[in-house]
Length: 232
Image (cartoon, rainbow, N blue to C red; front, side, top):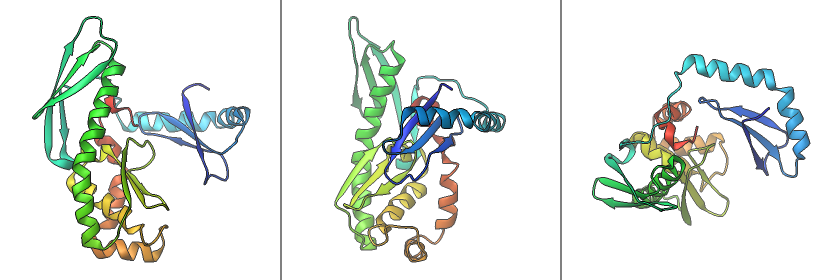
């Protein structure tokens, strides 16, 4: 079966499959799993994958891919206009910012190059926006961290490593400020409890009483991520 990605995980004990709402299929495997074993596993679950894709398709109307002219980022309460400036003989696409305007210039007829440039912009913007807020929340909660990374994770909104690095998804900017804040609080609380034990949730609840609803909301928040981002 074509059309699936493979992700190795040091925590995985067995192979598993996840189907995302827009039809993307990911196979999570333990390290050093043989490619032939992955193919056999996917083939054995072909019918389940088909049914999951069909169920998502029935529940959610597929969205066509369109490069954006406007990008609304509710999480940081900002909106940007996107312009495309084609340059003859250019082989790449770069971006520059001019206030609320983002200009992509170069080989803008190549949609994939444009998406890559837009993701670089989102990454840089998130680093600037997240840093001050995370530091403020760390001081408020008394939960420290060593580094902050921003990525475009396909499988999570955030994480906190044992080395003290908090990773946040730039797609959180497409959600609302309350959910962005909640994810930061959630990851900061992992500084004390690297698990989801009762003590961890009690700590989260000290800083966000509505954490259960926020945590539930995040499971369906992929709907707010535009198709062009390509995360889901």
